[in-house]
Image (cartoon, rainbow, N blue to C red; front, top):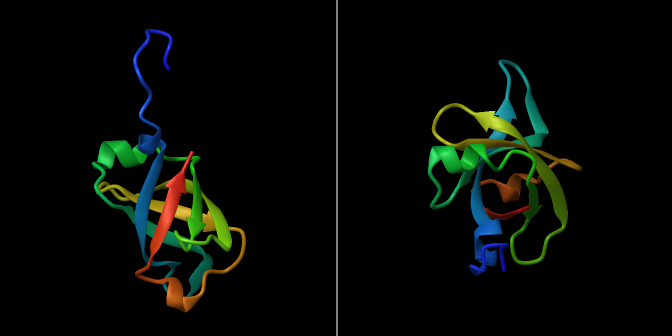
Length: 98
């Protein structure tokens, strides 16, 4: 419960996202950094998720990371993982939590 007596929605602190691609340079790709779209979130909500933790895969996490910054204006997140993300992870779901 919050100080004003209202209930806390615990599901709001756990979201799902979709891995779009690695972060790319002109002649290189960074397998430790991925671009993730938050499912069902507005771009302003995504901006408040900087610093949140990310786990892949969503069902049984093996690789963990952290939201580093926004990528663009449409609510895409840039996430840095502890180790390189597999190619099979692209276009799969991740769990985003505080």
